[in-house]
Image (tube, rainbow, N blue to C red):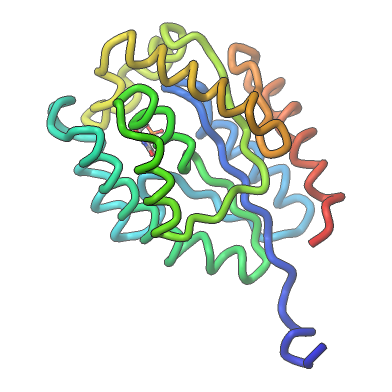
Length: 218
Ligand code: TMP
């Protein structure tokens, strides 16, 4: 091994939080970060769409305005552009320096919202993921709750940023169903957590799933 290779820090872990509206992802992200920082490592908490200046500018286009302003294909292109900017400027540099990244939403959200609920072809998402060289997360926590209960929690919390929340009940039912499909299809990567539990119980289950990552070889 060369001296340069020897001094490289081990790659960090990439944890994503997924789920429909009002599932408590942001609360869980904060709780996870506090608990994991206690172990003395750098934790980067970030979110999509956003997480870097260019991606934040694209976020405003996606989450504001009339719910019909973009087609699912247009949305997928905007999410992919935001994701590439986020990966380039925030996620990949953090993982390279050994930080752990906790990311509120990632490409599974595109699969649930644009593909399953919006009608985008799955192959188009695969093409976009390949194009932007999106790494797979090491762990994805899928927070699951009845969409009506989730929407009741989130309503009013994101004034002006509720373009997707305003979609109809059928849309949100398809989003939830697809997250469950993803969790069942990729049990190695994904852990489903019942988000109707208290935030404290959700955090305990999340930390149990995260602790398994510590035993995985770098
Ligand atoms: P947030 O409210 O969790 O910050 O996310 C913003 C909205 O964007 C949320 O309603 C879900 C939606 N979204 C997608 O439709 N596709 C995606 O790929 C991502 C990341 C988010």
